[in-house]
Length: 497
Image (cartoon, rainbow, N blue to C red; front, side, top):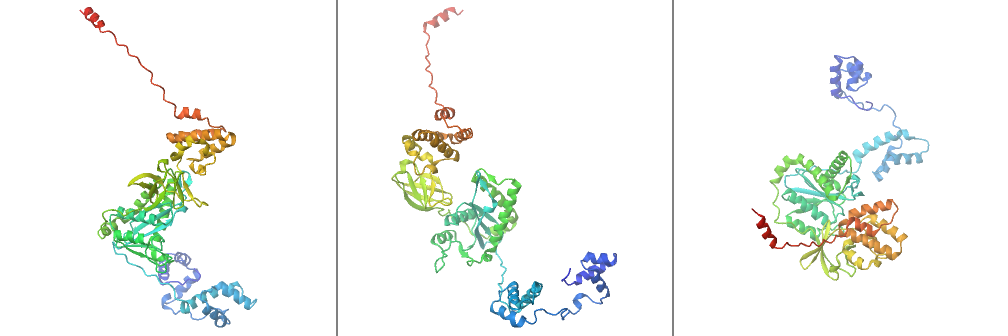
């Protein structure tokens, strides 16, 4: 290859092949030219034993300006690149240099930087004793293009790994890098592992560290969490992801493994989130089989778990308004009307919220978040309010939360068609009746019927649909039993022989 020196190894291999092949064939087998082969056969020593050439084969095109022009510019700012310097020389000396000298300039700059350039960052390989360090990080998984129920699932993966053995645990997170997500993922990993390492290392997570404070310190909740498990919390320097490289590389390998498994599955669609979480857990378990031997050694060095987990929720008081609504961190949640006026203690978990009253859990709801372009999120369950709507159907037309109450898109389409083609009062009564029918346990079947009516461009008939899905129970017929007189038994006795 041009530009590469012939090595002693190539010479030895050439001579071995030369015993059986021609000069051309032997040269081709070791990757040298026929001309080089002739020089090898004439030479009396190996390449490493011959002095290297110290003279130039052609005149240096930059000799006139290197010390006077180029070096002062590099001393001013060593990060200037060769293209910038060549363009500057071309402006100072028009027509003297073209782009053919760029490679020469790059070689000379590289040699100058090696002698006089800035100090470069040095990486120090680390040894990880068993049981000492656990590392964790969040990674965005949108590039996996996973769909849940036909909708693109925007989510993150929280990964915890042991630095020594490489054992890992992954939690699917559909929120940001919050403390609740961190707490849920970390505790799930520790209890699945069955022990606690000495140290937990993260990057500059705002969920764990107060990055805006002058004295960067652990947040109180994160400090309490680590104290509960006896973990020593450490972090890498802000902006230095290489210091947490053990988990960064595992994030890449995890997403690669998931992507390959999805390709093998030939589909990225899942019916429910639980199905997707089972899929992720299966792939992670397969990856963990490679670490079983080292994990057996590391488990003996782990500290025992505490008696129980610490709280995985945040408690926030909220009062239920007269609209059967309470607000929690920018999201409106509906509740049964019986809770109007009560002050709930709401426990917000990573995936759901619970309303507690008098020491009892009175309502449990899936956690909601504001959508794109929304200042306030809405989680309205029509089942909570359908009883009140049945008594006041006319309120449905201009109900502020109406659009958030439709359980499926086809119900919204049905309302739009009803409101456009029927009088408002009739449209409201029909739509509320359909919601009542759906709340009685026929939501899925009714959605199929409504979809067929939309495709046929027909409006729903509430009575017909009620008769189809929830026919009224027929009255039990009254059966009259007539008892025979007892005297008939005397006749039977007389007839008997």
